[in-house]
Every structure is written in C-alpha cells, then in structure tokens.
Length: 78
Image 1: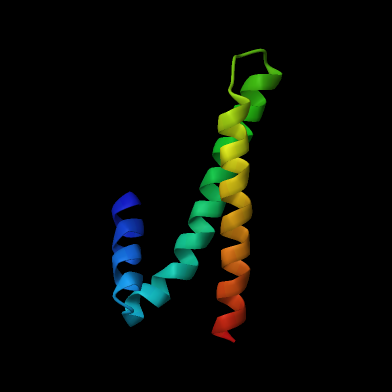
Image 2 (image 1 turned 90 degrees about the horizontal axis):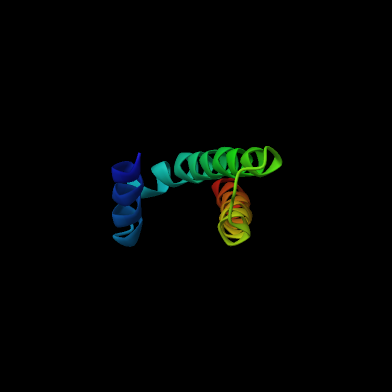
C-alpha cells in the first residue's frame, strides 16, 4: 500500500485527475490502518507490555489530520 500512497502523492503533486480519484480512498485507508495500529498499542499497554506514549500520541495526531483531510476532500467532491 505504501507504493500506492506514494503514487497518489506524486499524481496529486502533478495535479493529475487520477491523483484526485485515489486521494479519498487513500485517506480512508490511512485513517483505518493507523486506528488499528493505535488500538494494538493500547491493548498492549493494558496487558502490561511496554509502549511509548509518544508513538501513541503521534498515531492519534495522524488519525485526526487524516479525518480532517477526509472531511475537506468530501466537501470538495460535492
């Protein structure tokens, strides 16, 4: 999925239509994937395994930014 995200970024940088079409699904994918990773870290922490609050905060920021960008994207599609 990383190559697809990089391809989407390059296409958006060049203002190609395919980049705009792939941006929405990419944002949703990033949001869902990072949410799952954050959930794994939280479960690990609840089981007594060592985790990093900095990494958890970083993932939370990625989730919030992705959600905001997804909302902005959906508003523009209409």
